[in-house]
Length: 209
Picture (cartoon, rainbow, N blue to C red):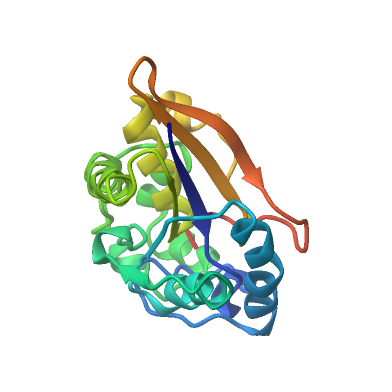
């Protein structure tokens, strides 16, 4: 049975300010680095066989905290980047709502293609889901930790599980430095074992930012 641990990066100043990061390369803040150091021993205890991360620094540096304990290299994969948020990247959510009210309303309602240059949920799920599967294939029957982003994590999980958008909207966001656990076997395929696992340090931030 293959175990895939999907780990969201630690906190950033843009998370704290509800500023849309998307694929902007925003670094971890002090809290985020502490979250990564605190979570890393819990994940190291799972005896991972491989670590894969988004190439954005907030994810790669989170993964590095685990690599420091396990001695494993961090493989980076740009397909694991967060959803591209088009015209909203760099805006505080309130600014996005003011400047693009129609698109913001569609996004809030769960429209998979809200406009404003935002990557569609279908494209996001396919991109991240393929990266998750390739990461899992690095250690069949073993454990792989993938460090990625909140919105991307949810869509990638949905892609592997075959869940529709309406189902995914009922799943709460990952808090910073929390993780989802999926397992795969030949009889059942991919299935969800746990979600939003980790130590509570701050309230969950909106996954998209």
